Image (cartoon, rainbow, N blue to C red):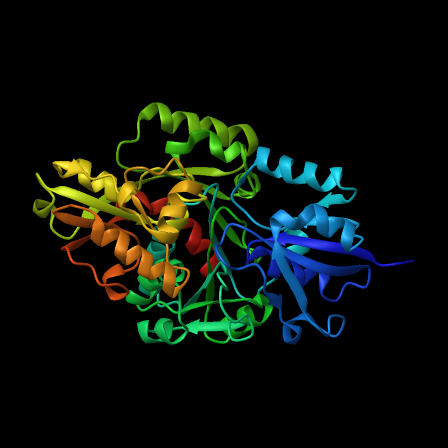
Length: 438
């Protein structure tokens, strides 16, 4: 029987995980290509031969996803497996239709085929969409584990945008480790705030090896999910966040709905400006697909360094890149801070954007009042710096999880804004954690 020729459609994360745990040593399949999307500049690379195994002595080429129709015919493809996240069900259907119309079959891989099993307890924090507040919950759990004298390592959903060989297994303990690894803005947004707390963060490409390294240093594994993907590691406690601002998205986005259906605890994040009607809608949606999960309300608190600096000022808001782009949010915590603390005006930055930042606005037309912190390359960081400094404002509100002042030269005063979770609302989650770490 001839092998099944496969293209893995991805975005530099889940695709590599699925290849390594399911396809790499599977004699039934021959992976002929990866495609890539969502992340600027990650196509036109190779998945390296050093990580590909003996079957793939030259590695595997990565193409832009737009080339799928031609690749299916050119490479005699039997199956295209979709292996990335934060897609509406409509988008999944559209990709499937392109694949089927060009003569190939369309596939998805489930949890049991792609989970890696750990020797120690695993707590996963996932969500139904990007920007629900996963990392804040992860941080609170980390502090709780620390108070219980439990050693833990945070395994972060991958963002390997550089040299995949060098990024196969990454261990971050200090900010200097992040700089040495040449982390992008997007990586810093996810790693830096944990490092500030003294929490070790492991990430990379090969999560079997990453997990085994973490098990040497930890009593508990804490999975900090990315986008709305499900965990790479099989969890003993699966926490899933929903966002009442996007109440219907838990039932209309892939693989966020998968997370909702397998959640042990669904966390309803009560953010600034949320209504009771939105809360009830999202809870009704949860109950319609997962009657066994426990629903826990947590309250997010808006934090800024100095609220009086915002009052009556013209402000520019810099927002978290993934949340504002493929996460689909028009605003984030910076806007909440500007409204709560009575800014005079939120300056719309769109017309001041240059280069790749201008292109980001063109690609995501829903963005108007916030400037998305994009920094996948040195050139894009320079575009970000120029765009920010062109905006006529009194003060800048940084709504990203990282400290953007460390990366670019900003001429105006910058104040940090963020969410924290009210400790009093986390009791039911801590009780569930106690059951698996004792």
